[in-house]
Image (cartoon, rainbow, N blue to C red):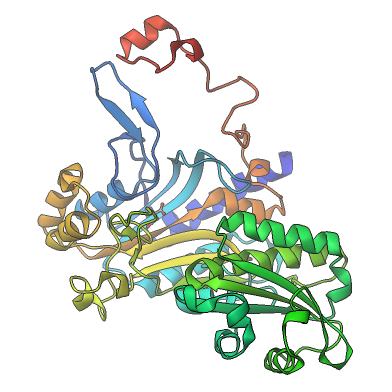
Length: 460
Ligand code: ASP
């Protein structure tokens, strides 16, 4: 921890040096007690002494940094504390730190080059040179080949779409493909790995694939290739040798290889295959196979859709893929009213070794467009953002920015398994401060002062 926390201090000092001294940025602190931002993460609420009034803790300084652009601070940054009530994971905490940046009169490319320069400046010498500029991959290619929008490109084993083959042979009959909307068959090949995945490992990998998706319509099968194009698999007895040969030929497999085959509706199958790809790779690495290269694979993922379909089953309004302030791609703007799901956003994510370490966008700087997106597409009440809409009406400069997740970046630099190893006084996986026991109960008197009652007072 000593080493990690000291390295963190060093890196932050160098970031300030780069941004302020070499690039004219102004370090500006913004409030953390604020009001709800529509269309984003679940926020923590803070009771006040005013009856029925609550602050929200900021999920990021997004609105403030845009307001600062309108106010004429054309290069802003902040090492900003952010809060999101979204459940914790090994790479997430309810409070975390972003290196938050915004610029006026900028472009996506300007921001990308600035971040590459910044990382290059802080990168520890003993970790080798950074391969800048970082490569770019479209969201579409990332999803098609890796099944995820933050691909780990340190190894291959890409997703291979064999839907056409499956539809043309008895696989489609076995899996009732005609009854599945947008049926897809996707395979991943792991060379010379059949013997490294035991039956027990196979069962647990397939079970976890099922569990993470919770979609009963998905089917996963592991196929071990044997001599003469034969399959060792639960599917083998249901297929003709000809079908097995055509699948094997398409995938270019030979004896000893393992194939992971997934079948089901494309929308849920693709991300599941993305997860399995990582899980099988992790498993093979525990068995001594070296799949991932030692390099640091930075990658810009670009051309995200601006909106995603609602996650609600009854089909609620669309959601922003990044956040509601992201500008549409100029080539697609004309589709905003007719087919919003086909519009790409000017949004870019920075990925390192399969972790998203940053994300940002060029912003909407016209108040009418911002209001249209909020009200008509996201179906949010624009009065929550009346201050921002008003500022945009005052002649806002075109602007854009990005935020880097400092904790994740540090955990990669320190080769730590969890962001908790690079944070002083981290919270546990369930969001508790184990040292002090926070969050804790408050007295009845305090509850009265803040005009709050708990639903079940016994559990306070
Ligand atoms: N505020 C955004 C976030 O926290 C980053 C950005 O768009 O600059 O994800």
